[in-house]
Each structure stands twice: as C-alpha cells, then as structure tokens.
Image (cartoon, rainbow, N blue to C red; front, side, top):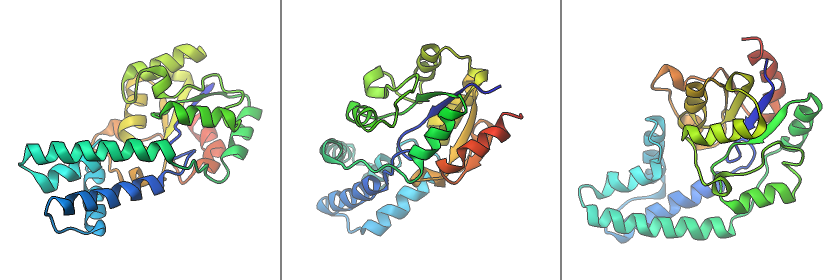
Length: 231
C-alpha cells in the first residue's frame, strides 16, 4: 500500500521552460562568439537530440558537439555557461503550474505523507515554504539544503529515512527518467512520470527507465495513484 509521495519540483510543480529557452539563447550566442555560425533553433534541435538519447546534461553536450575536439574552447564556454546559469537562477521568477496547489490539497486530504524530492537551490526551497506550497509536508528540503543531489541513491534514502517509510510504500513523481524513475526503481519505489518540460522527450533506453504510470500533468496524479496502488 502506498503511504508516501515524493514530488519533484522543476517540471511537475514549477514551470522552468523559460529557463531552458534562456539557456538555448545563451548557447547560440556563446557559440557564435567563438566563430560558429549557428542559430538558436539549431541549438534547440541539437539539445532535443541529446535529450532523447538520455544525456544527463544535453546543454553541456551541445557545447562539446560544436566545439569538439577543442577542450580549451569547450572549458571556456562551459565556464561562461555556468556563470550565466548562476546569474539566471539568482533572479529567475518562480512559476507554479496551474492546479498544483489544488492537487496537493487533495493528496493531503487523502492522508498521503508528502515529501519534496528535488534538485534545487535553497532559494527555491525557501519560496515553496514561504508560499505555503509545502505546508504540512513531512520533508521540505531541496538538494542544496540536503547536501546531496539526484540521482544518488543516498538522496532518496535520506528522504525515506526522514519520513519513516520503506521504498515499497513510496512513489516518486517526476519528469526525468534518469533522475527520478531509474533511481526510484533501483531502490524499490514505484515511479510516475510527468510529461512536462524538455525531459518529456527522453526515450527509455533500459527497462528500469520505464515508469509505472505516465501522466500529462500533476492534476491527474490523484487518479494515477489509485491505479499504481493496485500493482
């Protein structure tokens, strides 16, 4: 019987699409500065290709794709990209997806133990608590506050230990096959995939990447949980 739900943030709860579009614009500009004639649309198509191939960081893979085999230029571009992302994250707007608050309220009413399971900076965790989104959650710490990131098994074990449930009693709900579905299955949890954001394009490469259930957005989660709990 399912007792606990581990919820990813980026994708299922927060709409981060503007962030990824900004990354693609920056990469196109950065590559152009190095003398490579490329458009933002070409960068986007290459990102999509690496995403489908389950590359864990398709944006970084794009830099190497166009700069190979020049390691020095790749490292300099990576440095600039990392600096850009830090600046973006420091000033980004938080966009909560439609229906998230209502869905969480339904899950609480049904008595599920709720936990955040997200690779996010501490600023995001503070926003979630300030806005009351994680009010009543048994675990509301994000990766920067934990000191561990997905997909490390320790990340999930810390949460499960913290909320006092076994893996067989929990389900991971996230948008990534590599960071959410795979580690959940390795640990013995069930997994629900949410088809939002760029990672909806990921194509499973091994059976463990295949979720127990797939939903279009978080609003369908209560019904999906009933189906998964019958497995």
